[in-house]
Picture 1 (cartoon, one colour):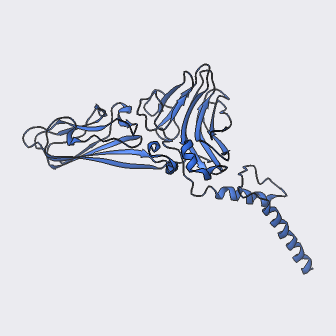
Picture 2 (cartoon, rainbow, N blue to C red; picture 1 turned 180 degrees about the vertical axis):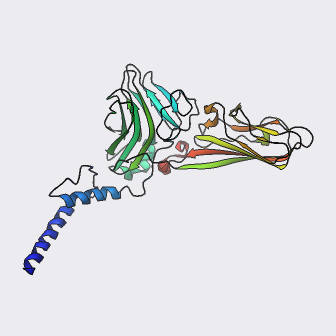
Length: 362
């Protein structure tokens, strides 16, 4: 009896070993497996476990999935993205705007197609030259997800393009809510691009998008992932007594990549005694403030967040859009001296930019 049980156990192990050996090295995620009472349940579990293992430590490969940076204004493509299609329209939506639709963060993007052409909003993660440096990516899986909102069925979907073809998600059902759409694409052996897309079918149709997420592997993300972000500062020092004038400190700072100013902090070595020191922060000579940062009389510190036209606090990066500072008021009497202006700004890092040429690292 004991020998029979041992023999049966040995056969079961041999059967399981044979099933596991049939699993491909690059396992494909199958959300329908394992099925109830499946004869291959162990192999199915193992297959999905291998697929899940490829996701460990994953990070969102998109830049600015919350659509924060719009250096060209609310009706031009947000930075890091491009739009295409005849008569296509793009708009920033969300908090404090006429169209308040958003899902993740303060803002979303609304894409409206033309009457006779598909509208596309896309972000290229790797161009052809970069793919050449990242040739090990050929044949690998990438997955994407995004919150998409549409009011008409079967007009809006997301896709992943590799220079040869595009894999698409299902279409939004058109129920006027944000739905999480997902897609997976196995890149061709010799891809020439890696691009995330939102497509809206022709016919003056519209869709909102929020939180696009692209990851390595065949398991689509279940929800939006934050993208790598950093907070940096530019420090402009104006030595000596405060004096009014433009471009103080002799500095014109150019951002390497798209950026958005989030705060300005001021400090003075000597406090003004009768009036505040008022500082302006400009993009290409135009202010990003309605109420400007100041150091009050008798104080040595002040701060303010940008509150003027949204595009004035956003910078393209790598272009001739300089950040400069002006002193609008220094007061009388003891005017204050040795002022430091700390301009804090946010940028998004791009995990795949290790493969990009210097001119494309933005």
